[in-house]
Length: 185
Ligand code: 5GP
Image (tube, rainbow, N blue to C red; front, side):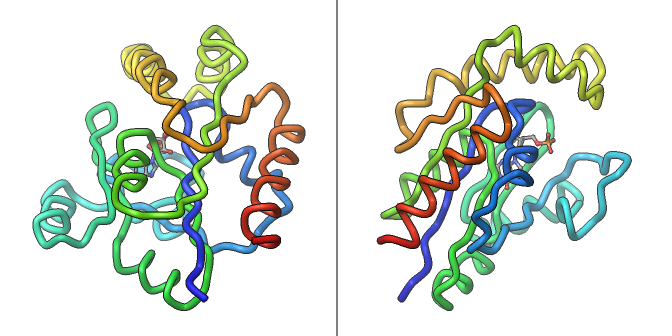
């Protein structure tokens, strides 16, 4: 049986990565994205992302090798089509942790996606989380916040909307969703 595609999205800084780490459900292959952004301290090439040049990324798009891609605050991010197709064909579930433009492309192209959108309790809370994370300068942070406002308006496209009020509660809610959608399907 073909695996299921899980699209896990939400604004930058909302805590997608932290929730994923707190989740117990792990019956999926995580798709490692390609990005043109610079590697951050603590990140490893091939684990967090495949870090590539803009030229390389563009060629992959031109060759039709990306399932989806998006420009996010000056950098490109995208999902490798072959990886996803191969894993799904092998019966594995595939987990995409991606921003909204890309998520909407996937929802347009692929049927029967389990789509989950994580929202912050408020925009003020999101700003405070991005500041605490401290990975961006002020200008980039403001751009990410502006983007978050746009992204939050798109939440109705997703099957499930989960509020990240507390990481373990949100992770538990997502575990329940995936258990229902995948194990009991
Ligand atoms: P960051 O620079 O903070 O790692 O990621 C910025 C945003 O891009 C986050 O919302 C992250 O989930 C999203 N992102 C990561 N990989 C992909 C991808 O392959 N495609 C798309 N569309 N977004 C991605």
